[in-house]
Image (cartoon, rainbow, N blue to C red; front, side, top):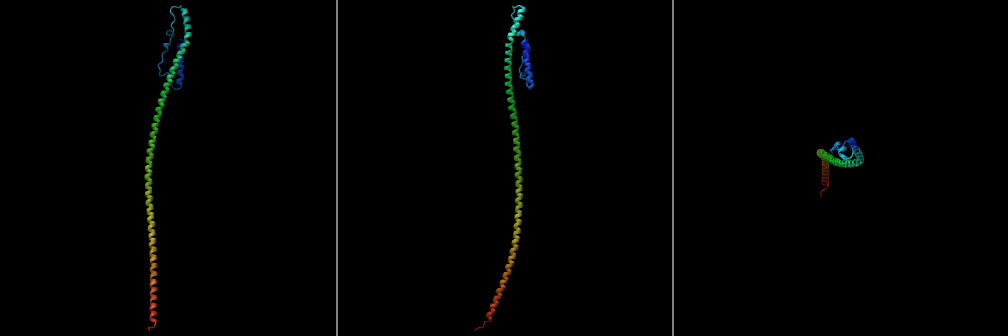
Length: 194
């Protein structure tokens, strides 16, 4: 029964090592019970040999076949470990792809939400700036009209002042002209007639 015990110890050791990492390589695989590896079924001694000879032959046969059986079991175990490693790699890649796809979905949703918020902010800012520009244009127009009215009032005052000056000059010119005409008439009247 050394072979069954050795094989059981190897499996136990592998399960202990793997479960320390959080996963067991053999957890999903059915394992043959250790009873299958009983020496009585694995090694059948010849029926004709004497009892002591049979025990000695059996012991020699066991000593000879035990390394071969252990090597076969080791090869089988290696094959199963490789299959489980490949399966775990496939499952890990599938889980990783699923996690990446889920994260990409979340990132796409965040991007879409950010674009929606940016569009809403842009429209709000555009409306605010348009309103501010309209108010500023209104204020500018009012200032311009006020300056224009002030200029018109000042211009009107200057025009009236110029009109008054021109009126004064005109009267003065008329007075001087009238005076000169009278002086000229008086000179003509003073000249003796022949």
